[in-house]
Image 1 (cartoon, rainbow, N blue to C red):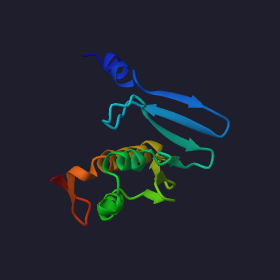
Image 2 (image 1 turned 180 degrees about the vertical axis):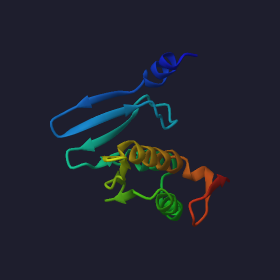
Image 3 (image 1 turned 90 degrees about the horizontal axis):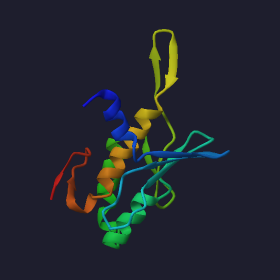
Image 4 (image 1 turned 45 degrees about the horizontal axis):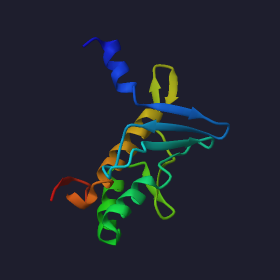
Length: 140
């Protein structure tokens, strides 16, 4: 497959909506419950990336009580560094790495997005995983 065709295939289900106070990025990540709503991540004007509570809300719909999974969720978050839990259920990235390339510096937003997506993918199936204190996961 040619690089351009592969890029088109990967991006086909991704869309963004830009507003004055935020950017919404819709990704083809579905929580497996038969619903067709894609995952929407919000990047606000203050530089905060969030799932607006969607991951834990979807998990709660499936398992009911989240308390048996709280320690595992915290271990996953600790292993993913900049991803934190704010409020009751919002997964958030506030701090992004600054990268230096020669004399140029830039903020690594993709790295923060990557960490958030990895945390979302693990937390969304935490009921099927065993999570060690260091964040290592394995199937139950």
